[in-house]
Every structure is written in structure tokens, then in C-alpha cells.
Length: 95
Image (cartoon, rainbow, N blue to C red):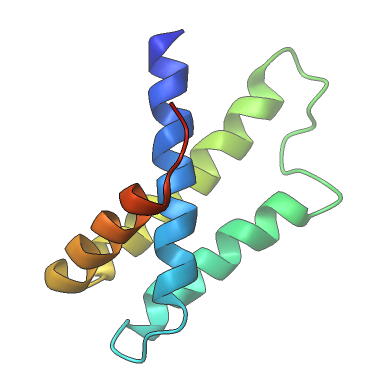
């Protein structure tokens, strides 16, 4: 259960970082593209693997979106990423 909570916080922080990063001209276009693809995949009305297939359908969604988010984070310059990470944790008001 604690692992799921950690993953949830990671994704929430990543979304905050990307909201900040999309406005910055120093962020590579590829990072912005990965974020757009991740959000687009979440909004698709269909899946690559249907969700009714006993857990496999949900896992593919999670793996694709997380891999796109992590790839995009690696492309952001470290100094900007650290600044946005601090801002994202300061904004966070969850206990």
C-alpha cells in the first residue's frame, strides 16, 4: 500500500513539474512531446490492450504513461528540474 502511495505522489509531482516545464523555452521539445504523448494516451478512448483482460489492460496504461513521464524528466536540464521539483513539493499540501 505504501508503494502505491509513493507512486501516486511521484506522478502528482511529475504533473506539477511538467505544468511548469511546458512554459519554459529552455526545455527540449522532445520532453514536451513525451509529456503530450503521455497525456494524450491517457485521454484516448481506446487502449492498445483492452482493460477487461484481467489486469494486463491496466498495467499497460501505467507502464506506457510512466515510461513517457520518466523519459521526459531525463531530458530536462538538471538545474531546471531541481528548481521545479522544489516548487512542486512546496505547492504540495497533502499530509
